[in-house]
Length: 215
Image (cartoon, rainbow, N blue to C red):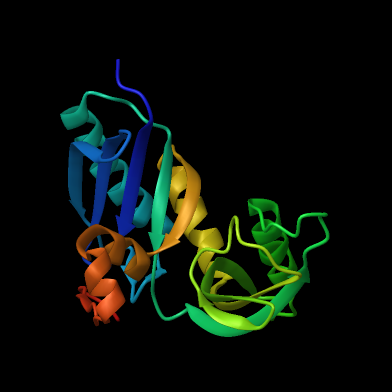
């Protein structure tokens, strides 16, 4: 019996793509995929919920039949003109006796970022740490296990339009599924096709779609 089943959904201007996979210990095993023609979105935004839902249902049905697995929750890729971002720097003090930094301290940093003032029609989609500082020493990728009194992070905060996200969720739910999580489409693309050494050296990834181009 298959375990750790995950489903991904890419809502495009010209087509909706669905994929169902099994998450193994150190790899992803693709079980099935489906593609359906879409005319319910315009430049990354839902223009017609009924048409978008129908395309989602068709793509997921094809993927489910090929994988011979029925899934109810999906991870949805998000892109389009409504995506914006900002950079934010914050810090927390390390209060434990041995001054060792743990995942709890990283979580505290993220929780603090979620309290920043943003427009009411925006929501935080991702908080991406670009660089960590320990006692003002920068260039740290992973501070867990290191020691210090002050942990600081330079974050890239991705924002999305609340109405746009609500319309995506309604389209998915009308198709008969629930949204497990959202992910920025360019990030999903980079995880799929780029190797770590390419990211370290620096690379521009251009995703050319039918209605939007993401960089």
